[in-house]
Image 1 (cartoon, rainbow over the protein chains, first blue to last red):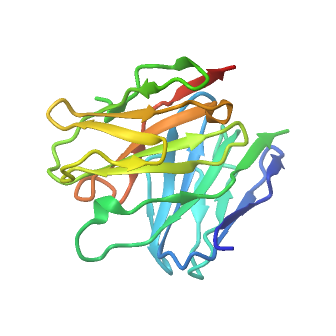
Image 2: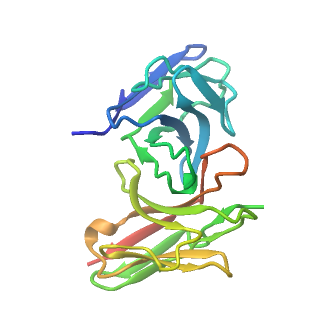
Length: 118
Length: 117
């Protein structure tokens, strides 16, 4: 079945440690996104990528890094510079409409990764 | 200013009744898309329904319908015949393809719906 997978489901980070969250999709979508969700709040965009080897910062990119070496994969690294990393992280993907109708692009989400700081 | 406002932090509805979840938005773009997502306690975001700014009719998907009032900038979600499985957090979101980060979805703060047996 086509879909988006994220791993691990739970991740624990020690102080000063970098950790990487995995996101893979087999929907053949061009665009991929990372969001952060804090308790009782909506989602905020960290990074997004529209094509391989290209990505753009979202609203809260500080302390995070990404790569897009393959169309199917968009890993997120939470660096030690992110001082408050405890949150729920959601990865999403969408097709791209290159000729009009970009407002119609629906994003589909993975099951998420909960990151906790030890 | 908030781009997406959901004024109901929590809502209760009796099983088999209909419920309306409110969403208002703010944009100066003539072209935009509005989305509703459901987030059960497991955490996954499930796409429910989409409404385009140029769509003449309100969107419907099974028991979900979107009450789109463009002049009032509101896009309320109506769930008919509520089921216990509808208990979840519901988010309204908007995409403005020509503003800010292209293709970014802006989310509201959500409404927690509880369906009572």
